[in-house]
Length: 264
Image (cartoon, rainbow, N blue to C red):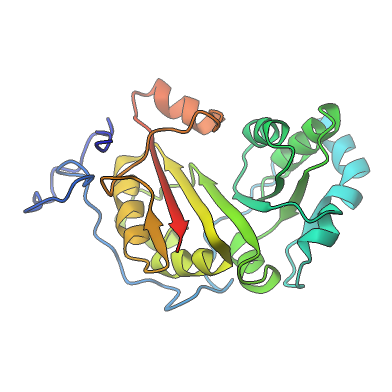
């Protein structure tokens, strides 16, 4: 499939590239990678988020009070045994940043043979997802609150994940903020190391320059292979539910780019 032409207005200050391989982004959306602040496999010293506590509804407060002890964990650096966490040995997929959790709950319901470890730092979203887990009778979802980089670096063993999903992360559009983006070379190397052979890293964004940045970063990671035949973006998988951020982007006329890379 040819790469989508994201509808975000391009930054025309960038000079157009020369020769382009199949799947390359359209002129004006190329990324200019800054030095990776991780300097190698990332640690929690460079955070890609700011805590968002927000106001909890009574329903969210109740869900956290009752369900967090059995369904939640703090990201504290303690090594994690996924089989013990879920009570079974099913494949585990890590979702980084689940918003209000609607898409996470839908995927968990559609994939009962897959365990989903969903991590975020948005307290109302945590409460909402816990409510959805209970109301829909989902036993294959656990929540982690804290820095996903610490979770990957210190708590999850190499080769322990069947998949990693990063849907609509903050694009940090200003150049001086690019160092805060989650998808960076050090993160790509870390994510690849935590995937089992054949496991997938699936990213999606509606921000054209970030899509180009992701494609460049992930394509440069030697442990990952792009599943798109033309080396570009992939068609949106039918099993991936639309997220709230995705709907907001589409309403603004943005086009969504999916990238699926497989652990070699």
